[in-house]
Length: 102
Image: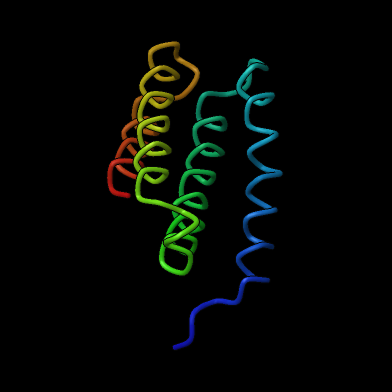
């Protein structure tokens, strides 16, 4: 199978970027921890997908250090949001597994 085109990767990246802009506002508002955690989980899986595409096709542009950095930030945020009770423990563990599994 052929790799996805740059156009498809750009469209997915744009959608995830738009979602990423909404996430901080959603976490500030007192929403359900389950809803907030679910949105963050969808974002994390999408980010992993985009990073996989970028890393596999554009190694010169998207280095392994960026993958490690985003994983570290994701782990930190999952732990912090769970401590502040903004997401549930179960969703925190799912987020941790996604970010560490990258």
